Length: 415
Image 1: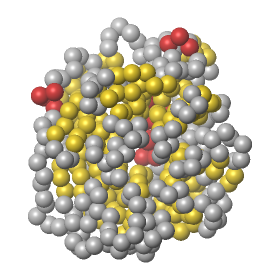
Image 2: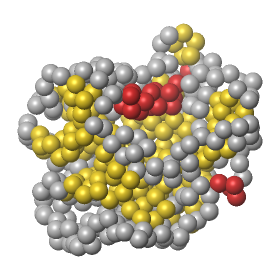
Image 3: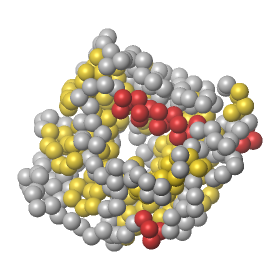
Image 4: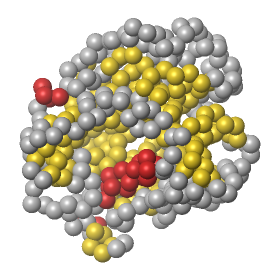
């Protein structure tokens, strides 16, 4: 029940853009690296593998109108990281599981020269045709663990995969809506920080874009005095937001770029974890570093002129974080932790209409960390349990039914 996993998640976000490393050798994730692996070492296309035991009842799931599609049922694939740090797909209706990678391992190999491969961070393109994921090759060297990071893309229709970024340590990546291109950012340069809160703007990095079909890389958003990390898109693809790195720890200042007007906007403050609505407004939690135990969900327009409290039912002794708009923007799902900041006793996944002050509890457990909406807004997929032993569950938001579909982490629903 300890909050270690939540703290680890925040530290990963913090360190992804703020590592300070020396320039005597190539470094990845703050560690020195040797030559990157060849593609033949790391991944082969995997054919569909159906488990002997079907986990779900193979019956259509009824879907209502409103925030949901009319008729039929929603059975698009859910991508996730399995307990062995491989990427897999599960059909939430039939229970069919398709492994995408097979050579991942959650156990770090020991002995000089020993190698371990791990996969994580699955992300679907907006049309659901391609799946991106991160690969890390870990090599034991005397006194250190070298890490080489690559970005791969998998196409379910052809069951083929290819590397799109080789030996590039990203500090966040996201598909550009309506395209087969991935926006990404890289870690800060050695010497970027010159004093606390003072940076060398000449070493700042902006946001880059890689076309996954051609491999062509281009500049997307230029830095405005600070390195940019953690790109995140509005659903319509007209806005991209990011953090401006100005401290060695914690989230950076929130900023965004409008492609319709070619304008750069910075709030000059950090807002923590956030999400865009289809209308271009924001929900955020002010979880900017280690949780204080007092985080709440706020709503605001993107010009930062109408901030208001959303999670009004969150009481003392609990904190709210990680808001996610439904596809229609009519509802927000978010997490609530209960207990002291030193020991969180349990978590709840809550659902609340944007125009309501009443929240409904959809899921409860010792640990709930990652979740995502189905493309029609009728279901939520969540990881229930601690990392390494969590279950992927699907929640019907109409009737509250919870169904286990796989074992793993970080579920992401195909649109």
